[in-house]
Amino acid sequence: MAISAVSATTLREAPPPRRQRLLEDERWLAFVLLVPTIVLLGMFIAYPFVRGILLSVTNARVGVPGDFVGLANFYKIFNDGIFRTSVYNTFLYTVVTTVFKLALGLWLAMLLNRNFRGKAFTRAFILLPFIIPTVLSTFAWKWMFDPTFSVLNWLLYHFGLITGRINWLGDPDLAMISIIIVNIWRGVPFFAISLLAGLQTISPELSEAAAISLAMFPILFLVVIIQLLYIRRVEVR
Image (cartoon, rainbow, N blue to C red; front, side):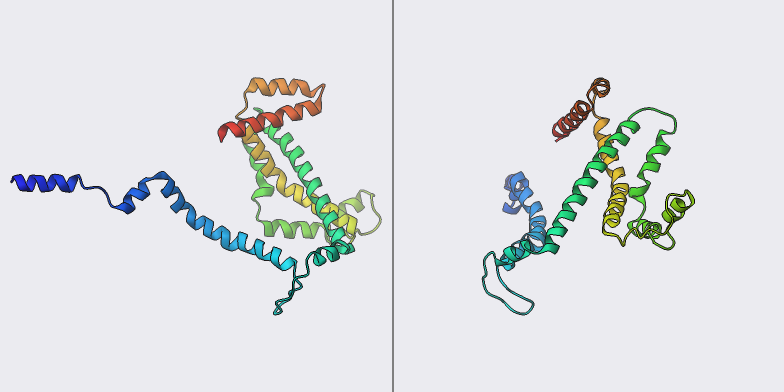
């Protein structure tokens, strides 16, 4: 009986296996959980990025390894007018859409942060552009910008603002304006809901103080609100 008791005590007090001890260590457990993510990011992001840099300094083509040419490819592309136009269009598109989405999103967030009748319905209505599937919204906007069946042309014509059809997507300037409008329409709800979530964590006294400053210093008001949102984000982290 004594031998059995000693054996049972020894079995109970035996140290856990090495694998179990490693998994109980938070550092090893975190590493094990991060390994799949690191592998996937390395395969689909890091490797293609490094490979692209290596290919950019060679004259390699499909099926041809190529030789090292240094910065010749970059020199050639920066002297290409099409590339410079693409960079300018991308910069213009990004800056304009981001500024308008942020400004309109902040305005809608401040509006929705107030208490009024039909607040829930207004929130759902504002979210519609973000909820609608991209395919449906794309076809709808394509139809509105169609030079022949465009509802925009029909409205402008009946209001006497135009005398002929407008090819919204055929003219370079109008095409840029059109896609900027579509992107703003699509992105404003996301900005509004994200900023609303941050505004609801700010003390009402601070929001009222910032609103009072709006009458005299609009820029100061925006700076105060953005700083408060950033501070709350840091505190949450």
